[in-house]
Length: 441
Image (spheres, rainbow, N blue to C red):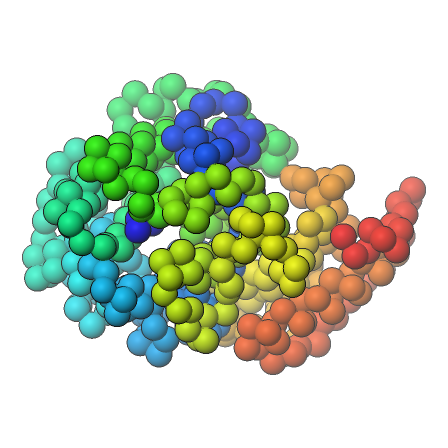
């Protein structure tokens, strides 16, 4: 089993989601031949919290990693521990972001046996200078552009362990920005290829750092997809592709300073919606899954695909039944927790996006609140790029009230106490009407 995990990649960088630049032919092929999670969302749009969810199948307030800078505890079993217990060789390559330091101590590696990684890859490396640490905490310099360097290491790992079952998690930094530059450095020549090309409508409308950064960002995405193709080619050449589950996804998206002062930490689609596809046993020919799926659902999905029992500690659920058309009982919304920029919570249904925040809480020290105020309401059917905030409109009071109930229910299900939510001040709408059926969409 292989997890190909990118960082800060928007869902609409992919061809299957309408990007016209042919950035992701390999991902698109997997999505079309395997199982495409069309509506996949993060449960926490910031690096470390999302990664804690991905390793444990729990929400960030349960893992305790509700913001960056908090190490992952050993309170819940991780994917590495569960696969290792089932007889798999486990390996981790790339960015970790769940430890206290670099090199990552052995007891902070989530149970992975083989290690070639950095806790903060954005600080131990640069686009053409990749330094990671091995199992013995020794620094290793890998040649080539950073995406290629990590991919080469992943291919070597697959080749070395082809005779035994393995679980390999490859975690890239791209297309995350290089922190010390506040830039998106692609391979040489790729920025020029994509600068001034197609711009997603939300970025075209809102600006932010789009014109400065989008060309480099697209170049990073292109190289990631080329690397994904190389890894698939390696599996094929080793005759492993037919019996290996491969997952491609990311931790969160990127809004290019349009929703707050940086790139994520927001409930909007640009930060919360993810690309996601699987191929291999149980997923080849699975089609396009339109149900709303959360990042927290992916760990139990991987275990289910391998026939490994899903522990009760996991708060997500396997999507394998969805590939068979078994949608009964599947939630009608996804739940999102937000930290660092705000103490926020949101639900996203097939039609509506509703979010609240706790303005009297410190988003760095407080993981949650007992009181929130309404902040955003978007009609995604009429406004898919979330340009018109409907919160407080008298025409949408019934929608907000219903979503308020759904949000509280999801917070309680995630282990949080039921809060009070203060409605937004009433505003009067012109020519807006919502039917009773639309309230439940």
